[in-house]
Length: 186
Ligand SMILES: [Cu+2]
Image (cartoon, rainbow, N blue to C red; front, side, top):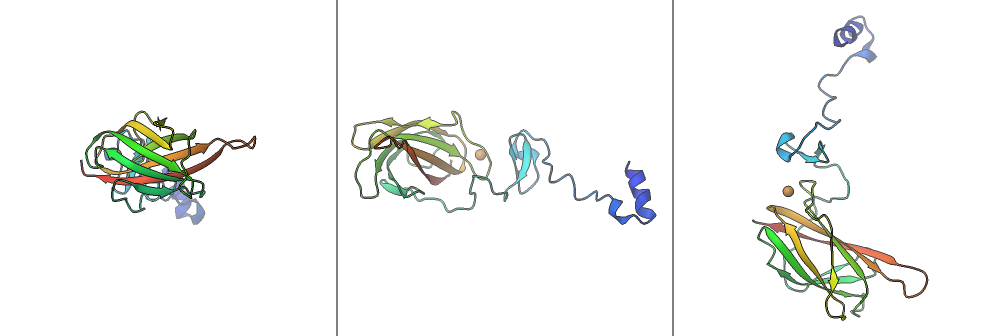
């Protein structure tokens, strides 16, 4: 087939010329781990993908410097989520439990929300197990706890958090989302 295409090429049908150097890179070579892929690629869902390819992971955003009481505003402007305390401090590769405070933008505690965290490593294209951790309410004053998130690898972890608020009326639930990003030394 290649010989045939090359022959067409020689007799002047330039459009039929094969481009052997350009094709196999975009299909995504099969892989099982990052080291199976080339430089600038990572292994995601069984194929090698370029690092700069959009998606939901924003790999180049700055990381957070941890302080107790770190606040994040939701992208929709509905909530503010405070990381009251991380145990342990974001550095080790282990199970993390986070104490959270959920308020509206005026600082009023919000109870009865559903808070689900999904830890991801944006630069590697993978998450953790279990994939999602749902927070439990702690004391009914806007306090919640995320227990035992397994941040098992050194590097940047982005903890994507979706907050679902119960509607005050029959209009139903509304969502907001935010993330925390920490670079774990390991
Ligand atoms: Cu990783």
